[in-house]
Length: 579
Image (cartoon, rainbow, N blue to C red; front, top):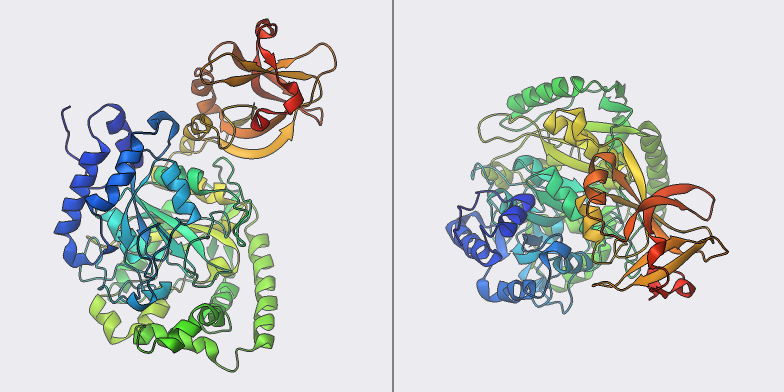
């Protein structure tokens, strides 16, 4: 095998192509990543860095998996060290807090089952309390492009590991902007799904009612691939919600704020100019723009740290802080202890909840079929400036991010044109929790400049066998950009048979007599992908019209009646999932 050079930044799709063409193996990639980590030791990216001994079992496990059925086979990823990886210490950025979990966090488990390789645990602002990346006893994580600047927090190591080519993607967490600010400062995609769309079980809480697990990636398509694996309701997770993301589409309008953004820090002028250039690009997208009053967004954001919501952090960590004097960074402890102020009583919490409910309703009305765009950050700082003024510098970094989770919005940071050489500038797209397809579709348009990049024309596809969620050929649905819509049943006019194939699969045959009602799933697929998808379907299966229990008809998998006599009738089961 002739080994080609490994790119400086890692792309999921490119790695998959290199694996398929035998130009690269996961083993060679991991060895190269370890060398990169050693060369970047002074950047303080890792708490538990990649080591071959720790990663080898995951490499060995790949030999038991079919790459064609594992959408993230051999893809290396980093994990913020407040998310559990079985057998590896979780520190949350505090050595005295450390524990070693026996189980993976749910989201980590899903990624590993899809073939991804966890390479290590990344540095963070202690207890995920900070947006600067300097609040860690494991060292200040340096910016990937300019080591004198902050990396952003709290998911500092996660972002920089991707930007420095030490992972193809990385998990972060986001309460006030921690999954977006580091992305903006390191020229990455930072995707924050809606609250509950990705499971939280196995993540150390900051504010459990607001926390989201997020992903950093070098491309929007890579983030979408991770989302396809990570998304899904988890019944053992109290914060999980069944939120699906539909096929990418464009919003009816773009919202910008009436108020001019404020910029700060040593590069305020450059950031202002970069924002103005981004607005000009937005205007060229030929989507109607509405200017809205965003004052209430700032009022909502203030509740997070200057209001009773900070008491939620104290509720989770207060006992540890009291019992472990001097274990936390002074600035971190000061923030956490503010949650025990006597004015933050039960009445103040309910007053804040009621006010937030008003703001949330207003935001979702304004953003119905719309996307709000703001700067991800109004500036950045040198690490020295943050050390000299840790509270104010950190507070300003959340100026355009803190409102998001409080108002139940989804968000994605995408790179705009750099503000200056090696000075990335990011913008964030927001919408309601059911409209993630709009922020992704508009991001795609902004980044690639072509409406054809957004697959607006789609078709429904009914599947009843190995293409259903959790079955081996679900990967074909994912690879063809299909989105799960719902479970349903056919009209009672079908027979389900078990075909004598390897692997075994079902065939759905319409009967002339009374039949059975068979369970199936409805997916939505871009028409641009439908042709290549149907070309993969082997005889005696094909695509035809399937009548649903409500009388409507959708395209879906059907089977030639010629196999009926020699195939086992399994209609009595009600569906392939019950076999």
